[in-house]
Image (cartoon, helix red, strand yellow):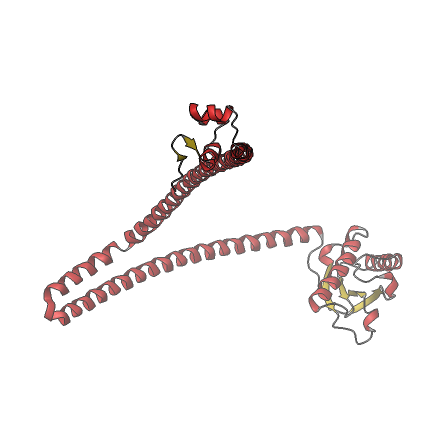
Length: 351
């Protein structure tokens, strides 16, 4: 927009002076030319000039105030711009650090992935080696068959249209292989049977030798007993004396094979009785049990009780073992006794 500086030659207008003041002039002396300064400083008798000067001063003050506000606003904006620049610089540095961390993490993850990839490759190599070893072991046992099959496949490829002939040869080869396998199995079976026969013969020989030795030992034992006067005597099987032990259940508790005082006294009477006889006697010891357990358990328990009686007669009372025998009835013979009171041992003296 065009603003005239002079309304007439050699004179400044109020608008021109206001424009100069708004443009940053500090005083009228700094912007006005020398003739104008002279006109301003020199008093004039014209009253319009005084009014103009008053308006000019007021405009200058307003312009200065506006300029100061503009400068303060510009300084404030510059300060805000500097703060924003600092914030942007901090954010840029944070972004740079974040990028660096991301690069380091990516590098570390890459190294971890490389190590994992190397471990996987090593495991795959081990598995491949193991599989290859197994395959080699399997192939080593099938090389002959594979070679035969390869030859047959080659023959079939060459024959082409004559595939039936190749199949027949394949069938013949398979039959030959099966026949060879049968012969091998028969040979192995024959060898096994021969070994079994040899072992059986050796066992029979050893059994015969043991039987001969046992017979010899028995003969020697009979001769020794005969020399001691304890040889076999003629026994008719007549019961001449009998006692029952543990007829009272409190004297023979459940599952206990041990004797009570009354049992020991009865056995003493049996020993005194047989000592008055000659050598022709035999003592039968019969063990009985109640029916509270299984058959096998009752049998073993009754036998154990009878063995206690036999050992007592032999070890404590001097009765020869050859003059005694033990028989276990378990819980079978309960006709004359209640089930709970069948824990007993019957000692019979036979002649």
